[in-house]
Image (tube, rainbow, N blue to C red; front, side, top):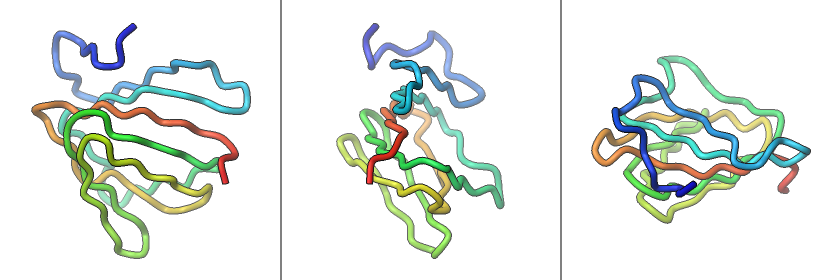
Length: 105
């Protein structure tokens, strides 16, 4: 498998693919093509998340009003319980994310 391989058609919904099975630490690839979190929806995960954007552009937002524009190579460490959401993702090129979930802090 190649991290940059994409499905032949752009997905209507984000694609989540486990690369390493969850045995306390989960590693997944996420493909976004114009998707964003639904209005008013916030992630509040029970584990830390380290995420890097490999391709595309995106905007992440936090419950305190802060937002972060992301380009390839930009990464974030989101502590467990921190309210965050995906505000915007590029459609062309689609976003390819690599995310690691676990006790990281």
